[in-house]
Length: 262
Image (cartoon, rainbow, N blue to C red):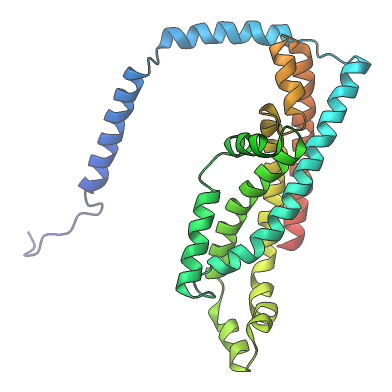
Protein backbone atom coordinates (compact mmCIF):
# COMPACT_ATOMS: atom_id res chain seq x y z
CA UNK A 1 0.00 0.00 0.00
CA UNK A 2 1.50 3.32 -1.03
CA UNK A 3 1.81 6.12 1.42
CA UNK A 4 -0.28 8.39 -0.69
CA UNK A 5 -3.79 7.37 -1.75
CA UNK A 6 -4.22 7.33 -5.49
CA UNK A 7 -6.88 9.88 -6.61
CA UNK A 8 -10.00 8.46 -8.20
CA UNK A 9 -9.93 8.37 -11.97
CA UNK A 10 -13.46 9.78 -12.13
CA UNK A 11 -14.14 11.79 -8.97
CA UNK A 12 -17.73 11.98 -7.83
CA UNK A 13 -19.42 15.26 -8.67
CA UNK A 14 -22.10 15.50 -6.00
CA UNK A 15 -23.29 18.91 -7.22
CA UNK A 16 -24.06 17.47 -10.64
CA UNK A 17 -25.74 14.39 -9.16
CA UNK A 18 -27.95 16.44 -6.85
CA UNK A 19 -28.90 18.70 -9.76
CA UNK A 20 -29.90 15.73 -11.94
CA UNK A 21 -31.87 14.14 -9.10
CA UNK A 22 -33.64 17.43 -8.47
CA UNK A 23 -34.48 17.76 -12.16
CA UNK A 24 -35.85 14.21 -12.25
CA UNK A 25 -38.01 14.81 -9.17
CA UNK A 26 -39.34 18.04 -10.63
CA UNK A 27 -40.14 16.28 -13.92
CA UNK A 28 -42.20 13.70 -12.00
CA UNK A 29 -43.96 16.46 -10.06
CA UNK A 30 -44.72 18.51 -13.21
CA UNK A 31 -46.04 15.40 -14.97
CA UNK A 32 -48.44 14.73 -12.10
CA UNK A 33 -49.92 18.24 -11.92
CA UNK A 34 -50.26 18.59 -15.71
CA UNK A 35 -52.28 15.36 -15.96
CA UNK A 36 -49.92 13.77 -18.46
CA UNK A 37 -51.21 10.19 -18.54
CA UNK A 38 -50.49 7.28 -20.82
CA UNK A 39 -54.23 6.82 -21.43
CA UNK A 40 -54.49 10.35 -22.85
CA UNK A 41 -51.47 9.68 -25.05
CA UNK A 42 -53.05 6.51 -26.47
CA UNK A 43 -56.33 8.37 -27.09
CA UNK A 44 -54.39 11.11 -28.82
CA UNK A 45 -52.75 8.60 -31.14
CA UNK A 46 -56.16 7.28 -32.17
CA UNK A 47 -57.54 10.79 -32.75
CA UNK A 48 -54.40 11.75 -34.65
CA UNK A 49 -54.77 8.75 -36.93
CA UNK A 50 -58.36 9.72 -37.75
CA UNK A 51 -57.27 13.31 -38.39
CA UNK A 52 -54.51 12.21 -40.78
CA UNK A 53 -56.92 9.87 -42.59
CA UNK A 54 -59.24 12.82 -43.30
CA UNK A 55 -56.34 14.73 -44.87
CA UNK A 56 -55.85 12.33 -47.77
CA UNK A 57 -55.86 12.81 -50.67
CA UNK A 58 -54.59 16.42 -50.82
CA UNK A 59 -56.88 18.90 -52.57
CA UNK A 60 -55.40 19.95 -55.92
CA UNK A 61 -58.36 21.87 -57.32
CA UNK A 62 -57.41 24.89 -59.41
CA UNK A 63 -59.22 27.45 -57.24
CA UNK A 64 -57.63 26.08 -54.07
CA UNK A 65 -54.16 26.01 -55.63
CA UNK A 66 -54.54 29.61 -56.79
CA UNK A 67 -55.39 30.74 -53.26
CA UNK A 68 -52.54 28.70 -51.79
CA UNK A 69 -50.04 30.00 -54.35
CA UNK A 70 -51.00 33.58 -53.55
CA UNK A 71 -50.51 32.97 -49.83
CA UNK A 72 -47.18 31.19 -50.35
CA UNK A 73 -45.84 34.03 -52.49
CA UNK A 74 -46.85 36.55 -49.85
CA UNK A 75 -45.11 34.49 -47.15
CA UNK A 76 -41.92 34.41 -49.22
CA UNK A 77 -42.09 38.16 -49.75
CA UNK A 78 -42.59 38.69 -46.03
CA UNK A 79 -39.57 36.48 -45.26
CA UNK A 80 -37.34 38.24 -47.81
CA UNK A 81 -38.24 41.77 -46.69
CA UNK A 82 -38.04 40.93 -42.99
CA UNK A 83 -34.65 39.28 -43.46
CA UNK A 84 -33.28 42.17 -45.53
CA UNK A 85 -34.29 44.95 -43.15
CA UNK A 86 -33.61 42.85 -40.05
CA UNK A 87 -30.07 42.07 -41.19
CA UNK A 88 -29.52 45.70 -42.14
CA UNK A 89 -30.40 46.76 -38.59
CA UNK A 90 -28.64 43.82 -36.94
CA UNK A 91 -25.22 44.73 -38.30
CA UNK A 92 -24.78 48.04 -36.41
CA UNK A 93 -26.61 46.72 -33.34
CA UNK A 94 -24.31 43.71 -33.15
CA UNK A 95 -21.23 45.91 -33.48
CA UNK A 96 -22.49 48.19 -30.70
CA UNK A 97 -23.12 45.16 -28.47
CA UNK A 98 -19.56 43.81 -28.93
CA UNK A 99 -17.69 44.60 -25.73
CA UNK A 100 -14.28 44.56 -27.42
CA UNK A 101 -15.29 47.37 -29.82
CA UNK A 102 -17.77 49.54 -27.93
CA UNK A 103 -17.51 51.36 -24.60
CA UNK A 104 -19.11 49.57 -21.68
CA UNK A 105 -22.23 51.73 -21.44
CA UNK A 106 -23.00 51.31 -25.14
CA UNK A 107 -22.32 47.56 -25.20
CA UNK A 108 -24.51 46.83 -22.19
CA UNK A 109 -27.36 49.08 -23.31
CA UNK A 110 -27.26 47.41 -26.75
CA UNK A 111 -27.30 43.99 -25.11
CA UNK A 112 -30.27 45.08 -23.03
CA UNK A 113 -32.12 46.07 -26.20
CA UNK A 114 -31.24 42.73 -27.80
CA UNK A 115 -32.57 40.92 -24.71
CA UNK A 116 -35.87 42.78 -25.04
CA UNK A 117 -36.09 41.90 -28.75
CA UNK A 118 -35.48 38.23 -27.92
CA UNK A 119 -37.97 38.09 -25.07
CA UNK A 120 -41.10 37.29 -27.08
CA UNK A 121 -42.01 34.75 -29.72
CA UNK A 122 -42.68 36.18 -33.23
CA UNK A 123 -46.35 35.20 -32.92
CA UNK A 124 -46.75 37.36 -29.80
CA UNK A 125 -44.92 40.26 -31.43
CA UNK A 126 -47.09 39.84 -34.53
CA UNK A 127 -50.24 40.14 -32.40
CA UNK A 128 -48.93 43.44 -31.03
CA UNK A 129 -48.19 44.77 -34.52
CA UNK A 130 -51.58 43.60 -35.82
CA UNK A 131 -53.16 45.73 -33.12
CA UNK A 132 -50.90 48.64 -34.05
CA UNK A 133 -50.93 48.62 -37.88
CA UNK A 134 -53.83 46.29 -38.68
CA UNK A 135 -54.06 42.96 -40.44
CA UNK A 136 -51.77 42.19 -43.34
CA UNK A 137 -48.21 41.65 -44.40
CA UNK A 138 -46.85 44.80 -42.70
CA UNK A 139 -47.54 43.38 -39.25
CA UNK A 140 -45.81 40.12 -40.15
CA UNK A 141 -42.79 41.90 -41.64
CA UNK A 142 -42.34 44.10 -38.56
CA UNK A 143 -42.66 41.10 -36.23
CA UNK A 144 -40.03 39.14 -38.14
CA UNK A 145 -37.71 42.14 -38.28
CA UNK A 146 -37.80 42.24 -34.48
CA UNK A 147 -37.14 38.49 -34.34
CA UNK A 148 -34.26 38.78 -36.82
CA UNK A 149 -32.61 41.61 -34.90
CA UNK A 150 -32.85 39.72 -31.62
CA UNK A 151 -31.24 36.56 -33.02
CA UNK A 152 -28.65 37.85 -35.48
CA UNK A 153 -27.46 40.81 -33.36
CA UNK A 154 -26.74 38.60 -30.35
CA UNK A 155 -24.81 35.95 -32.27
CA UNK A 156 -23.00 38.53 -34.39
CA UNK A 157 -21.84 40.37 -31.28
CA UNK A 158 -20.45 37.10 -29.92
CA UNK A 159 -18.67 36.41 -33.22
CA UNK A 160 -17.05 39.86 -33.09
CA UNK A 161 -15.92 39.27 -29.50
CA UNK A 162 -14.30 35.96 -30.50
CA UNK A 163 -12.25 37.37 -33.39
CA UNK A 164 -8.47 37.66 -33.30
CA UNK A 165 -7.63 40.96 -31.55
CA UNK A 166 -4.10 41.11 -32.99
CA UNK A 167 -5.35 42.16 -36.41
CA UNK A 168 -7.40 44.96 -34.85
CA UNK A 169 -4.41 46.15 -32.83
CA UNK A 170 -2.18 46.09 -35.90
CA UNK A 171 -4.56 48.27 -37.91
CA UNK A 172 -5.05 50.65 -34.98
CA UNK A 173 -1.27 50.98 -34.66
CA UNK A 174 -1.18 52.52 -38.13
CA UNK A 175 -3.37 55.39 -36.90
CA UNK A 176 -6.50 54.19 -38.68
CA UNK A 177 -9.83 55.57 -37.53
CA UNK A 178 -12.73 53.44 -36.27
CA UNK A 179 -14.31 52.93 -39.70
CA UNK A 180 -11.02 51.84 -41.24
CA UNK A 181 -10.54 49.39 -38.37
CA UNK A 182 -13.95 47.90 -39.15
CA UNK A 183 -13.23 47.66 -42.86
CA UNK A 184 -9.66 46.34 -42.64
CA UNK A 185 -9.60 44.25 -39.46
CA UNK A 186 -13.10 43.40 -38.23
CA UNK A 187 -15.20 42.65 -41.31
CA UNK A 188 -12.65 40.37 -43.03
CA UNK A 189 -12.70 38.14 -39.93
CA UNK A 190 -16.42 38.03 -39.22
CA UNK A 191 -18.32 38.56 -42.47
CA UNK A 192 -18.34 34.86 -43.44
CA UNK A 193 -20.00 34.01 -40.11
CA UNK A 194 -22.36 36.95 -40.44
CA UNK A 195 -23.50 35.76 -43.87
CA UNK A 196 -24.02 32.28 -42.45
CA UNK A 197 -26.17 33.69 -39.64
CA UNK A 198 -28.15 35.76 -42.14
CA UNK A 199 -28.87 32.77 -44.37
CA UNK A 200 -29.93 30.69 -41.38
CA UNK A 201 -32.25 33.47 -40.25
CA UNK A 202 -33.82 33.57 -43.71
CA UNK A 203 -34.67 29.88 -43.30
CA UNK A 204 -36.19 30.66 -39.93
CA UNK A 205 -38.19 33.59 -41.30
CA UNK A 206 -39.72 31.38 -43.99
CA UNK A 207 -41.04 29.09 -41.26
CA UNK A 208 -42.08 31.93 -38.98
CA UNK A 209 -43.92 33.72 -41.81
CA UNK A 210 -46.42 30.87 -41.71
CA UNK A 211 -47.01 31.25 -37.97
CA UNK A 212 -47.41 35.04 -37.95
CA UNK A 213 -50.03 34.69 -40.69
CA UNK A 214 -52.21 32.63 -38.35
CA UNK A 215 -52.69 35.69 -36.11
CA UNK A 216 -53.24 38.13 -38.97
CA UNK A 217 -49.68 38.88 -40.09
CA UNK A 218 -50.29 38.00 -43.74
CA UNK A 219 -49.00 35.11 -45.81
CA UNK A 220 -50.12 31.49 -46.02
CA UNK A 221 -50.91 31.25 -42.31
CA UNK A 222 -54.36 32.79 -42.71
CA UNK A 223 -55.56 30.34 -45.44
CA UNK A 224 -54.08 27.49 -43.40
CA UNK A 225 -55.96 28.49 -40.26
CA UNK A 226 -59.16 29.12 -42.22
CA UNK A 227 -58.97 25.69 -43.86
CA UNK A 228 -58.47 24.08 -40.47
CA UNK A 229 -61.47 25.91 -38.99
CA UNK A 230 -63.65 24.86 -41.94
CA UNK A 231 -62.53 21.22 -41.56
CA UNK A 232 -60.99 21.29 -45.05
CA UNK A 233 -58.23 18.97 -43.94
CA UNK A 234 -57.33 18.02 -47.51
CA UNK A 235 -56.54 21.69 -48.17
CA UNK A 236 -54.52 21.78 -44.94
CA UNK A 237 -52.44 18.86 -46.21
CA UNK A 238 -51.85 20.58 -49.56
CA UNK A 239 -50.60 23.71 -47.81
CA UNK A 240 -48.36 21.71 -45.49
CA UNK A 241 -46.82 19.79 -48.39
CA UNK A 242 -46.02 23.02 -50.24
CA UNK A 243 -44.55 24.61 -47.09
CA UNK A 244 -42.34 21.56 -46.47
CA UNK A 245 -41.16 21.58 -50.10
CA UNK A 246 -40.26 25.30 -49.95
CA UNK A 247 -38.40 24.92 -46.67
CA UNK A 248 -36.43 21.94 -48.02
CA UNK A 249 -35.44 23.91 -51.13
CA UNK A 250 -34.47 26.91 -48.98
CA UNK A 251 -32.39 24.62 -46.76
CA UNK A 252 -30.48 23.24 -49.75
CA UNK A 253 -29.85 26.72 -51.18
CA UNK A 254 -28.80 28.18 -47.82
CA UNK A 255 -26.49 25.24 -47.16
CA UNK A 256 -24.71 25.83 -50.46
CA UNK A 257 -24.42 29.56 -49.76
CA UNK A 258 -22.89 28.86 -46.33
CA UNK A 259 -20.33 26.50 -47.88
CA UNK A 260 -19.36 29.14 -50.46
CA UNK A 261 -18.58 31.75 -47.80
CA UNK A 262 -16.88 29.44 -45.29
